[in-house]
Image: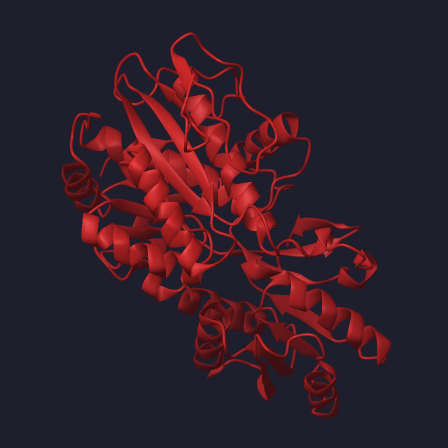
Amino acid sequence: MKKFKKLVSVAVASAMVMAMAGCGATEAPAESSSAAADSGAAEVVSGEVFKIGGIGPITGGAAIYGTNVMNAAQMAVDEINAAGGVNGYQLALNFQDDEHDAEKAINAYNTVKDWGAQMIIGAVTSTPCIAVGEKTHEDNMFQITPSGSAVKCAQYDNAFQVCFSDPNQGAASAQYIGENNLATKVAVIYDSSDVYSSGIYESFVKGAEGQSFEIVAAEAFTADNKTDFSVQLQKAKEAGADLVFLPIYYQESALILTQANGMGYAPKWFSCDGMDGILGVENFDTALAEGVMLLTPFAADSEDQASKDFTAAYEAKYGETPNQFAADGYDAVYIIKAALESVNATPSMSVSELGDALKGVMTTISYDGVTGKGMTWQATGEVNKAPMAVVIKDGVYSAM
């Protein structure tokens, strides 16, 4: 099996300009680039390029996810171009905002498709990703989502995931809690109206069977009622839960931690990738997040050399520490590079020709990235890699 390893050079000037929607900075222009009038991206006009479309939230409540993916994907594109490109061709990225909304994600897909995208990174979150997946399937366009974890994000043979699927996240969380004896009684608070949250909850319950802890409360909320969690917390407290599992996004998690503190309830907290971002919630007392644990494929303070190099490059370029979504986005670009090189692809190939070639090779390649070593893919589109967990300590995510 052929193994591909990512480049870890610090980003340097790219051979194209990329002025992405929602991103305030652009790369220094090269002589071969000109502004694309409608897409907000820059397009190399001399010679063929591989065109990658990106879709995710870069405004709105989930913007921390999409912005990190967009920034890291652009960094990867710049690194690859500076090192000579892919099969002798440069890459171009056009990343569009979907505001974590399925309908807007379709609009974003149409925008990058009109621009000439030949493959898609995204969408970043599950519901928009599922919607976009219907379109890429119709067009037989290769799609790889950095962080869309719902099983349906990869329901068609042209779609693959960098992140763990919801069943894998839920089952792995249950296994981690049990094997590390983190609790004897566990409560779950989840969003029954959200495919991401409910999917993880269901697999967590199955994964808990035979573990050393008992689920003593499982309390749901919906998108229409996600500001007051006093009832759910009270039931968890009365049931004696010494750990609360939160398969939800960081915005609601911040409210839950704040309200639990107000009622004098201080269990352990465990979550998944949706918790990443809680330290950046406006007006949230981050001291309340001390000790929060979450399953993740990446920790910025990891001693792994690839992670250290990626983190240093990202911090130098964007002035902030990357989260796991950034790492997923970065790996997504390099996975595309590995797949393109494996089939000796050229930009002159049609969208469908590239789709056939790339989906045919994804189950045969192995890739070493910042979110996992020796990553491989199943025919279902799911990734195989080892999970890890981090804990929030002294206001930063630290590997456990």
